[in-house]
Image (cartoon, rainbow, N blue to C red; front, side, top):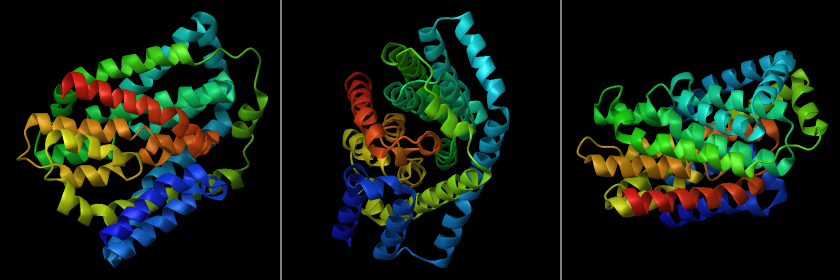
Length: 336
């Protein structure tokens, strides 16, 4: 069984980067591989199916509503971004938006923050390379920031519940590390994202002129994607329980780079324990959160933004993996 799960993991990791048809249909691919994983591992059951079918409902509804609002009110967002760009320089605008989205995501949730990101990117009319850089760095920021409170994202909620801690535990534990990282990501975005020399109408028109059928189709794809991630996580839970959760802190930190592919909420649920010391809890969570930004399946904001903006798995990985690995090394060397 373990060998089959390793093969499935490698397929999930590599095929979206190597095979065009998989890359173009990654949502359906993840759903199919999730079902295969659950069946192969023996975890498939009626309860798992119901859980996997119900988990994406809230996310899908939020995405559909936000997509409709973006369709109806994108001109107002355009005007706001244009006023902001006239009031401050482009680099300041990029840095401030990346930092702000990261910091407020712990209050407004990662889903809402990622949908605001889509609206901002659409209005900025960046070229493709700058769009990928801006979105990836913003999603790193959102994923990290949302972890500071149990309101922001499921990983934080699970950690608080499993550890039996209060609302402010993660702010105190991770805030001194995550807040400087969010600021660093904003500065990096200001350096790497180029100011557009002319309007790039195609990307803007593609988002804002979606038909209602296209909006619904995107919602269905996100539903299948999240359902597939739930099945993947449950399928790998047995391996995690047997071989991973008992590892020492540094090894566990690097092992959690699998969060770039697997559902990090499932990994957090499997690995968190009240018997862990603060150092190990910090290592587990940072490993999950940082690596979650490296590939599209790693986090809900990545999925939403990539889906809405048409960013491919290869485009995301080309920039996201190096950025994530550099951050992982920095945190490992100086803090762990």
